[in-house]
Amino acid sequence: MPQQPPVRSSVPRPQRPDASMSLITNVMDHSLDDGYAEAAARKRARGEGAGMPKTLRARLGLAGGLVLAALVVTVGAAQARVTAPVVARERQELIDRIDRETTAADKLESDVDALRDDVSDRQRSALRASGGSGQADLVGVLAGATTVHGPGVKVVVNDAKEASSGGDAANPRETSGFSDTGRVRDHDLQRVVNGLWASGAEAVAVNGQRLTALSAIRAAGDAILVDNRPLVPPYTVLAVGDGERLGSRFQDSPDGLYLHALEDNFDIRATIATQSDVRLPAAPSVIVRTAQPYTEKTEKGTS
Image (cartoon, rainbow, N blue to C red; front, side):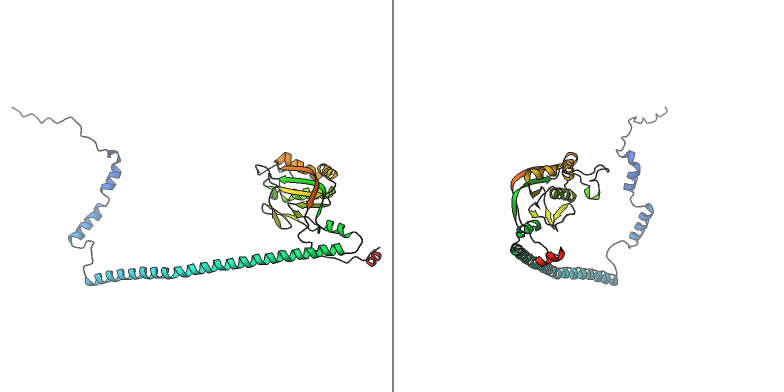
């Protein structure tokens, strides 16, 4: 009777989870090429595998290399330890020198302020004592050498609540100096001050800085300088003069209309109010570049 062939199970063998990644699996299982693996096996069979050197000379060379490496590391650490206090000492000496120079500069600045005040007092005394013509007080007021008070106006100009950049190229503010159209610029403050002078102001001060014929309103970056002193908004402009008339003439002037245009177009905040008594300080110093004593002979010679 013929023998029946063995019955094979029809249940398939389970597939490996990484069967779809055969290439990656092969690389991981055979990280070393077969040729390299055979060469390494032959070297191990001959006793040439990796390990400690076998000869005395090789061992001495390895020991010398280790000693040299340790010596380099030790010398570097020692130098770093020696250099650290020197660097710290030099740094402290530099800080002390900066502190000394700063103290000396502050003292010199204080001396300059004291001398400037002394010069200003002498100039005011000379103006008060110059002749009996009754013009000394007027000259002192016009030159900014004396304090003044009287009726006038108060103009407060401030940046927009949310200063923005850009603007229409046809607008007169659209220049390289007016990229941020929501901020008050030195040109704006100049127009306000010049408009007050043209409207009949007898004396003007900006944030407590008395203006004279030699005063300058400039810009340094985003800051506005009055006589080289930086100002912080809001900018308060006080002017002594005929209060009602001065305020009315200024608002109707081209500079007053310019200020209103800034309010309407760029949200710059501005207020104008009449004051019954405005008090302005004297200028910090009055510099006389060219002067000639006034005498009756001089007047006759020029007439």
